[in-house]
Image 1 (cartoon, rainbow over the protein chains, first blue to last red):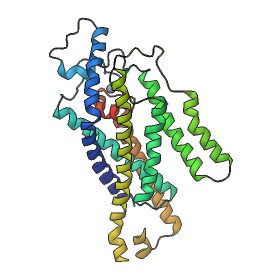
Image 2: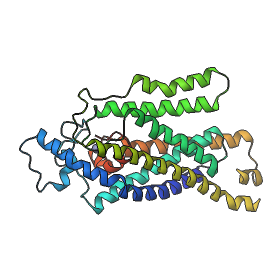
Image 3: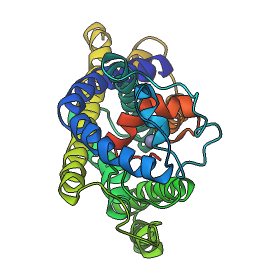
Image 4: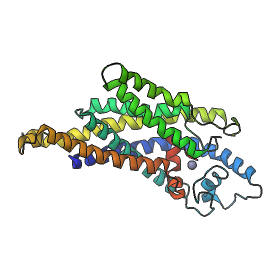
Length: 251
Length: 61
Ligand SMILES: [Zn+2]
């Protein structure tokens, strides 16, 4: 059983991740690159005297000036992939890793629920997955372009993860529990993160990324996120069934 | 599941615990993968996954 889960999750995540990485290359990445021009202006203004020439690979580090609390993130010598192919390869690898992670989470949920795993049911779980990691967090924290002004990273990460966990639990209780009390609790869990509210900077509007660019990015990246879940769901169901076929034939 | 019913019959409870074991492994792996790809504070992992974090609406930096 464990082998079957690992095989289906890896295969589905790998294929879905590669397809979405290709999609990102033509949709979100050009917007990210365009935004980084503005982001670098902000970073340079914040640190007068920094010369950008010859620091091509350090662009991502500059982006963190005054923003990132990550240990070592502000050190000028932290590794970053060189622009072009290398950067694309690393981004694609991380997209594949995320897709495999989503596939494992989806299969884990279906197994715990005791649902038969096929393409249709996996697709409905994938829709829930999109609500959990895409729609609900984006309701409070819109997809970010580099250079957009945002609250403290750790605060946003905590809110994001809390929202995802509360939304997943809330959906489960709302859709899968009987009676009145538990579904109502589920509804409360769905709403709670948004009643609490996502962390936003006090000085909203201090970013320099044009609003048109940010708006395009928000809608495009949510669509790409949805495509990723749809592919993960359909493929996880398909690979799961595919591994069963020889056994069924034998029986 | 059919294989077990066919060759070596497992009790329903046995199959259920098999499923839950597999689910636990998948849950752990999935969480670690998504957390590392989307939330790790390591500068190296951040820089490698920067574009993906932005593209999939994880908080990035
Ligand atoms: Zn970042």
